[in-house]
Length: 342
Image: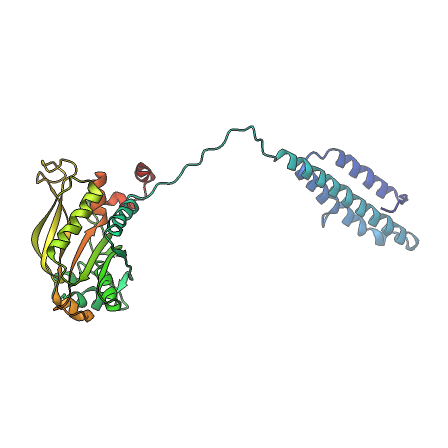
């Protein structure tokens, strides 16, 4: 920087005061305060520039030259001080490799995801593939193509959530079966996991949103015995080799014959307990042979092909396997509950 002697008394005092203030700077904040005091918009340098007009015409040029020099000097001194503190800060921030490591806590899988993965693994091992479909459905796919007449109870507003657009939130994942059959020729072997929606009041065993897995197998010479074999294999995959399955006659508009199937209680091993209501069996869901009328909607020849379909509630299976007595626990996002499954 250019060397210059200072002529004016007020400028000499300014320089002396600055170096005195500079000697007391010990950190970034103090350096910023000194910079603002001297170089700020309303600082001492700015106030002295305003006094140039008070000088005589012969002094103005010299006063301005010396003041500009002092301004550059102060700016340089402050910047050097800031660089000095930055170097000190970098040294302080270096990692101390002698410190003990910090333990990272892994998250926990949600019990619904755990069961969904087990269900998929079970059916993958039997040659099934996973298929998905939209959660917002049409009346055709959710009801009509599944052989549900207009007066069927499941169409009631108490069960189904209809949208202003004319669509609805799917009440089961069976519409995926129709969509798959429209695109594929037999053989078909798929499961359709996903969320479904019903107009239910939440309680210990009901939720307006829950997960369901439905399955479909279509080929030549598929029989009820094949359905029983698949369900039994699935039960033993999930609950062990001692698991048993029983079928009870029932009715569903898209299967004929239809049945509901139960698994032997894994808690009491069929002896009877409070969970199975002393029956030794736990109700899982429904199944049956695909009704020929459904095949007509997708262009399959019911004289050539047969098939079976089944469904299950994921939360219901999770409640059985993990001994959970309230379905609402799955959706309350309580970390104390979820951490139990880590």
